[in-house]
Length: 429
Length: 155
Image 1 (cartoon, helix red, strand yellow):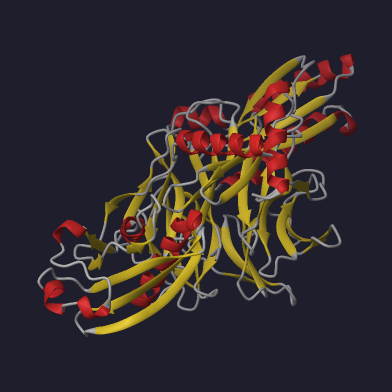
Image 2: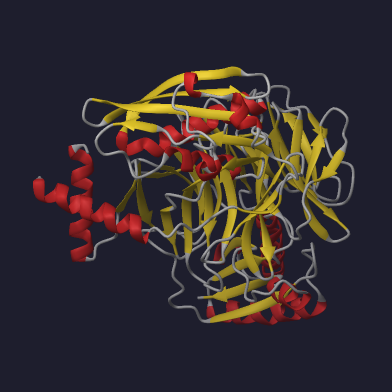
């Protein structure tokens, strides 16, 4: 066992060095005056502090979407560790809106406990204090957790720094390499889940974040698979003739909505994961595809060309009543719910160009969020505030993103030049 | 590190020496993920011919030239008792899953025309690849028109 352990450490060492992260967020345009935050380096009363500096991880997180500016410790006028050492004047001089301070101590050999405070400088008030503990190896996770809290306390939205993106990678100009990958939102831990010489499509996270459903053509035809992240175990859903595509999980994780054509024309079906059986939901001679399950579990949105051009429809699962939701333009497809089903995003064609559009379902008002061309596969962050989608940079596939208010636009360049079909994980605690 | 994980690592090491289908464990920080490879990839061994029929944008009607090609191919298929695989493809514009549906409409349109020309339904398989297998990589009209196609493969 000692041999294995040594070998494992060796393996980790090498893999972490060769894990050249594939995707890094690069801001194209951000807020003109982002909120200014100071995160004082954490004081460690521990023999060998971890090599990830907590304040640096937090800085990277909070600046990820261009919403905050986190100042460097070098320009700070003081480095307080506890509340008595905080002089508000020091921070007002630097135009700081929020200050984060903290200290960490050892809990046994491998555990640490970290105390921290989030302070509103203008109001001279502590807006959050907490103690967080965990293993020293997962110090980055602790740091992401603190970033999430800071984000939540300041913006009122839950943080998304502990989330992941699944995507399909097909290296630029390669003909037969498809790779299903996942990455932390900050670009770290970019790992392959499944590789094939045949196309891989439509990755969809289970609500628990522990499994991914996707479509693979490894048998020469489309089939839906579920893969468990921790074990790599794959299980196929029962295959039907023709198209088997577009999986979307029910919020309770018991069902998968998907598309079957049965060799004729595509309709929406629901797969019962306990019974391993399909049940038909829509039935129309047109194309019905791209279902997305609402958070309440009561309805699905999907694309249908039943009116002559692809438009977005919503179906109530119980009553099977169908309502058309989009009326502007002649190409509206692959919608995703956000904001508890009050809004949707989808691909909207305008003057021959494909953009990501946001629509309020009640007012019907539509707003185009992106200025890129040939946009596809939009996916919403768990807090509903950021959208990642696939687009083109010349003839290369790239991922890009935009905040819901369109104020921050970013790209995620990939080394392979072939990233597509991003799918944002649920919040993983 | 649990015993199970150590076992997996050991298995991965043995695999890398013996060249068996790989299951590799990549561990970075505390994220443990096990990756898999497709066990059996579809192969095209024994293919006799491949005939391409073109389509116009967002459309699955077969034009006169395509009909002529399919009619001629149907005669060859019948006289040689070949089996047929029809693949439907789209250009990259629009969404992937919708294009999968459109590609199947194209493959089905070709299959129907083969059947009208006397090929038995039992001899025909159809598959849609949507926009997943372009023959031309560019994002321009000439690439797009090359990629909007159905390929009729005989075996």
